[in-house]
Amino acid sequence: MTTKHRFIAVAKRQFAENGFDRTSIASIADELGLTKQALLHHFGSKKNLYGEVLRQISERHTSIAANLVLETEDPRTQLETVLFASFENAMEEPLESQLLMRELLENTSRAEVADTWYLKSAIEMLANIVLELPAWKNAPRTDALTYVYQLLGAINYFAISQPTLKQMFGARQSKAMEKTFRAELYRLIQAGVYRIAIKEN
Image (cartoon, rainbow, N blue to C red; front, side, top):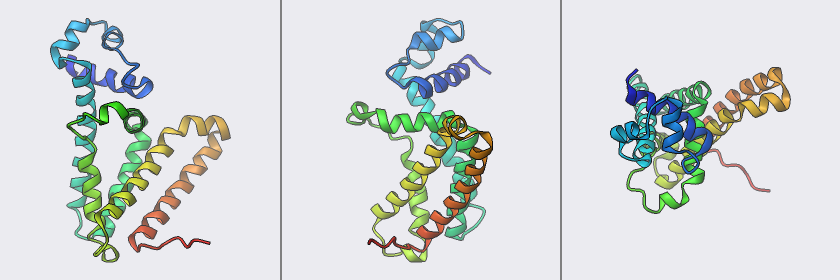
């Protein structure tokens, strides 16, 4: 692993655990036994390093989704496959999910001046798939984006909650909850596929 890749790996964990504002260049460099100057040589600033971490996560997710989409022309199968792949990835890489959730919750000030949205392409790809479904043919794009965002939010929230759920309910019950979540995720996807509305009382 190159020095640059080592910086990115440590930065991803620290940004996920501490957030952007509470992570310093010094703490990342110190963990690797290197200098701040070495980090700045590769990235120029903490903001650039943070952007590189997000870019790599986003590009990996988008690439996985794009390859899965090529395996079938059926939009329903595409949607199910990509979303369950996202779930598996979130469970295997909880730090990534934690970082993405932090970025959405804590970037209020940066959002006002941001010129790059690293997750936008992945969300829009899924929205495009949704709009190919028969029940969504005449639906507003905003509805598809909202539906996708809800599902991805549920997936990532469940993934980053695993340590807490295990302590709260025990390993056995939290494992059972994972099985139930998979079933509920499938149900939510199917409800969305057919645009089954939840009736209001």
